[in-house]
Length: 317
Image 1: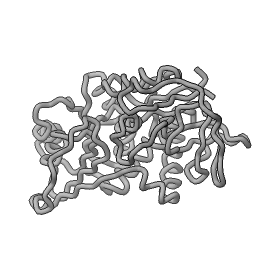
Image 2 (image 1 turned 45 degrees about the horizontal axis):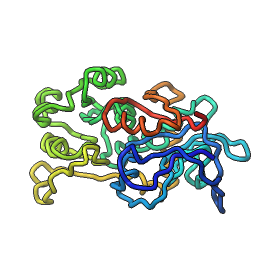
Image 3 (image 1 turned 90 degrees about the vertical axis):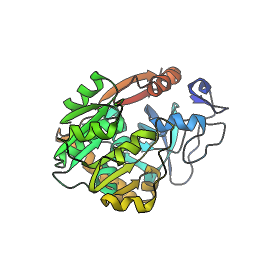
């Protein structure tokens, strides 16, 4: 079967379309005919071996798939690897039936990026109605859904950041009350200004470096920052626990992998997300569909911040 395979670590250039052996499911696993494979920022870390979990070679990347099982079920699933292929293996516990009314792109957007946004707001920061919420990278896969969920759950003011005017407008169209330039020289001042001169209650951050540092400085007393990625590859300044006392600050980390040890939690997230989709309160933003043969270009576009919303690969092309 056709798949993207890497045999050395590096950037997008290491991904090659090739023929690989058919995967064979074991006990408790499903063989899925992949209709679409999702693309996540984490995939770019896998190819260069900079992810939290170290990667071994050779590797077929790709952590999420939607398609049909051998018995005809339509499922969306998170997989440890192997998604960029015509067929893939999924653990039954990490596969969720897709309602007929939910299309492939939306299903893929919900299973990783949707559950990430859900967990950040529900579990990491415990959002209370009326609180101000900053969503960095608000036009991206997680960010675009976090903006909508924050509004659906009663946030008082949603402040989006994005790197260009079109992305900022998209964030506002999705429900953000105001959008800030992600390249602002002083993010602390920019966030406080966007919040009417007040410190903010919640920040969802996957950027790293100075953006994390300056967002932390913008938090109000009892404010919470949830850190779930480091897209700019720059670590933030280490935090001294005693410094958190100055504003009764909470800093949380969230890695979706840990949620898969709690299938009850993921099932709850997926059920709630699909219900919000059915009600028209949350929608996936289509960011682009690439042929499997152009996975390299998809990663190049993603890393260059030329994309918005959810990106997918079509294994048939």
